[in-house]
Image 1 (spheres, rainbow, N blue to C red):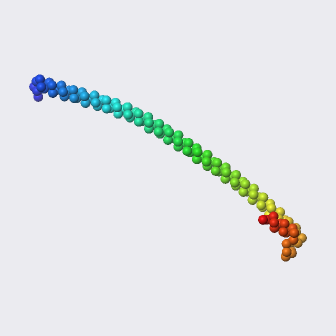
Image 2: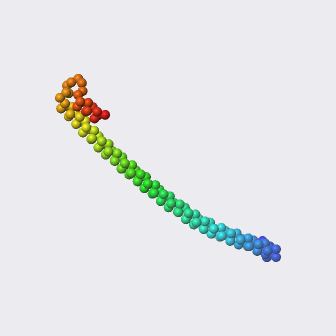
Image 3: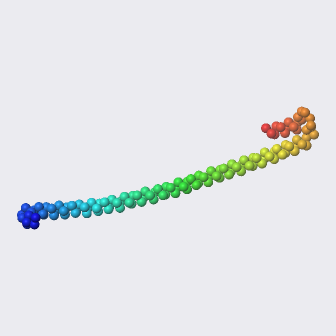
Length: 123
């Protein structure tokens, strides 16, 4: 085997094999460097997308909290308005009951003028 590589054809084949091995090593080195650059590039893109997703998630959470708080405020305002209307109606009912109790014609079968006025206030 050694005699073959010492012959002129063997030296050429050995040189060609050495050149091929050198080319393969250079290709592997360049391919690895390219892979490393692509890995770094896409890790940067993924990190940026992750940061954007976190920002979007936080913004959506804040938007939902603001919408919920606004809805709660509107609800509280409506409840307060309804309670005020309810108190007003209860005062009217008490006033009408008091007037009905003081009406001298309360025992009659027909309504008098004050009874008609009280009935009209209920409408």
